[in-house]
Amino acid sequence: MTDLAPPLAKPRLPLPPLVDLLTDVHGYLRLDHADDRPWLDDLGKDWPVKEWVVFLPGHGKGNAETADVAVILPELVRALHPRLTPAVAGEAAERAILALTGMMSLPALVFLRGDRLLGSIPRVRDWDDYLQRIGEILEGASEGGAA
Image (cartoon, rainbow, N blue to C red; front, side, top):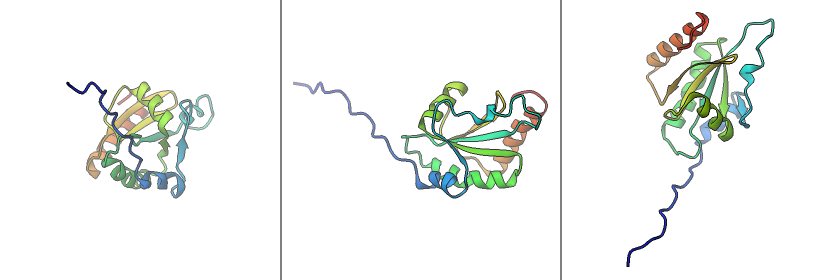
C-alpha cells in the first residue's frame, strides 16, 4: 500500500536578526501593513518627492542572502545620503509590494517615488553593481521615466 498523505509544507523560517537591526538600530521605518505606503505621502506637497528604497527580506524563505542585504543596505543609504529614504517591509507589506511589482527573487530592494515604481534590485550584488544600477534607477526617475 502506498502512502497517500499530502506532502509536508515547507517550514517557515525566521528572518535573520540583522533585519530587525535595520529598524531597531538604524531607525528605518517598518512597513507592517499592506496599505503602508509612505512614498505616497509626498504627492501634492510643495517639497520635493522623496525616493524610497524598501527592503523586501523574503519572509519565511530562510534565504542566506537576506542577512547580506541587511548589512549592505545601511552602507548604500549612507553612500547615497540624502537621496534615499529607507524602509523595511513586514510580511503583509512585502506581499502588497510584490503584487505591485510582479514576482521577483527575494531578498530585493525596491525603489519608489510618489506613485511610481522606479525599479528593483533582487538578490545580492557587488558594490559597484549596486551603485551603477541604483544610479540608473534614480536617473530614470529624475528624467521622468521608470528604470
